[in-house]
Length: 198
Image (cartoon, rainbow, N blue to C red; front, side, top):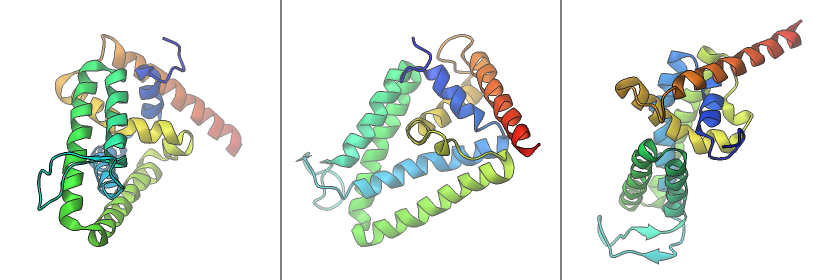
């Protein structure tokens, strides 16, 4: 697979890892990334439906095939393409978030939902920016590659947790190779930073 391919998991994870090497910053991202995804889906639950499934859940609300569904589905399919095993779990979580967000949106109603989402997003994004500024001492990845950072962040948080708790690797030597690439990117960034300051 080409080095810069959209589906090159190793390159994506090394890019993400180069911006997340401090343990406290990693912990903050582990706590805040999925809530950002979930609360985004709550807002997207209010987009017009393309099709309504038989009502399930609170009152007369159904699961709407709207932008929220296709947003979650896009993430789910992308993660499945990156890695079948961990991607299947990530896809399940993405679609589970869509279901949960749909029910939460129905329960809250738009006038309360946007306030809850705004508060949660501000809290989570602030936590992540503080993680980068105070602990990582490096600007977030989204400033260098917005799409890659936002699209891949939930999957990499999950992949890190699977590696920490279960020793999971998409293939043998994956984490060793990713660490080497991330370390090289960090060194290159540090060298550039040193040149600018001298």
